[in-house]
Image 1 (cartoon, one colour):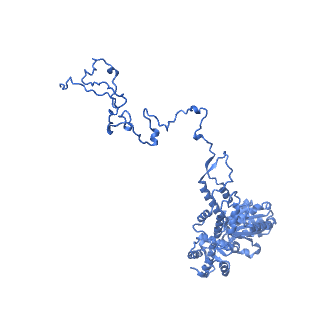
Image 2 (tube, helix red, strand yellow):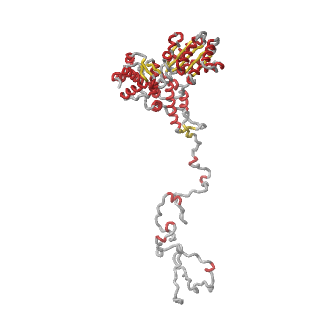
Image 3 (cartoon, one colour):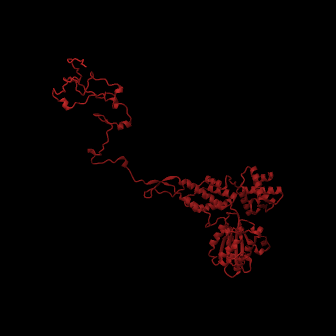
Length: 561
């Protein structure tokens, strides 16, 4: 196709101007090639001939008249949209945050700000400070750590739990009279070589076993010439098993293998022979109850055999075991055992026991006085059991100890010098709230109400039970009533007075406590509901003793619901 462009047409002269889109330099061979080599722009029709640079400002600067306008925003490229302009326009810099200023790189030829010099990577010293060195701020005043976070030890709680044990203590409080009676009995019969028997009765937790064990330990030297045998009848499989158990303790292996009545005859022969005195202690003696009471009769008759050298001490909860179950002993006054009754602990006695135990803990008291009094009042109102009071306080201490051990405290290390601390204070005391929480767990939601005054001899629950028995005996016109009917009447009276009644098991425990006081007579049966209850004193005396409280007077006046 023939070319339409004229060969004589003049070429357009483009200004030789440096721009952001300047083409790459031509190779040296092309720039320096001689004419006639095929690279001459005059010979190449497609070549563009550049005119010489006009006189004016330097190529690196632009005059205001010749300054080009920037490209459109869509065609701007690069950081800050200034790559199409050889030099940034004189304007205020854009605001940047501290993070952007900290990590921003300086442009070529830009001087750093005078107020924020860059940190030197080489920590060389300036000429003025070559002779001294300024320590860093993190190294100023740094000392080894002398304190750390530790778990609370709570050694005071450990000591409190150790002294609140239910084992035999070194000293029995509120049992001085009973202790003196037992010691006198042992001196008269064991040391004096006189056979005899002693029956100790009382409600559970009144200190029968602990008191006797303490006396036996204290009098061990005086009883060294005698033979002591201690048996717990709860561990026997049957009532007849007491004979082989005693024979085995006395070293009669052949007699222990005998059967039936033969063992009892061999034991009688052994106990009437010459030799040292034998002290036989039978704990929980009421477990030897059998048909016809043959076992109990045989045991109580051993000390009164001709030439006997046996001293018998029996312990049980029943107050009238020898009077009710062993009627033949009453016919023979010489065979009657000596009686010793352990009354339930009162509020003052329980508080004294707890305070004497806690005095053994060094430092500040662990339990508040109000908590001790509260525990003593509630336990004495229900059972008078010292073991129950000790257990309640110990569980309250464990509750507080568990809360304290879950916390941390800042303490100095052993190797660091620290100001002397005034002992190890108690982190948290056991208060009334903790004891109340444990009591609610032990006795259920029913909190036993205490007596109306400090001079009342009967707790409130026991008074209501006696009143219910009086009303029921009048209604049925009978002296003996079953425990089931008594509990039903007792529950109705409590419901009418808007009080929380005890369950049947606790009602049986209340009846046992009243039996220990000598107010009631309780005849136990295989089923607790069939046990028979009766008054042992006159009704007029009971009414006169219970009329001091307003609530009890209202119960007796209103009658049976």
